[in-house]
Image (cartoon, rainbow, N blue to C red; front, top):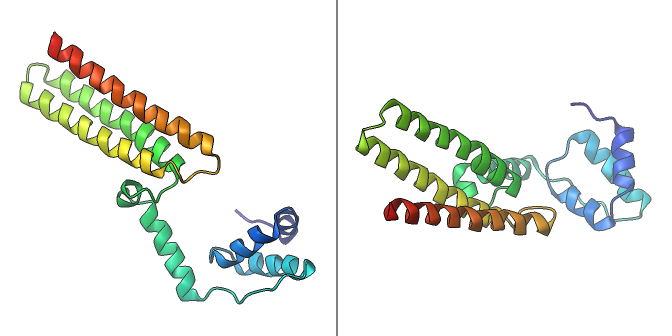
Length: 168
């Protein structure tokens, strides 16, 4: 994806001085983006700091990669959208499908059914913790409340299912 300098200039003209300064410090911009950003900062008579070094930019990239790992999700470093949609929705669908497949292929194998249920429960707990911890990593606080509400409802659904299964 190629973005023109004029597009960047229009975008930078619409953000606050603080956002420009933070963006400059981010270490995630291309050379052209830095040139356009620094021109906007000079137009606003802001102090233009030195650009991040290559080592600082590599450190930012490494932190970003760590945040998007499974460990990053568990620690609450990943974006909420990633935790919710990738782990919660797509991953939950895939794990649930695998469990259903195992149950279909061996409907009388209690050990397989129990193992599959435990895998599903372990994945669910991992996902709940990840979504809960990553909820703070969103641009609108409403998404955090909605995601945490989904975690609570999902936990309650599992508890209700277990109670029904035990009662049966």
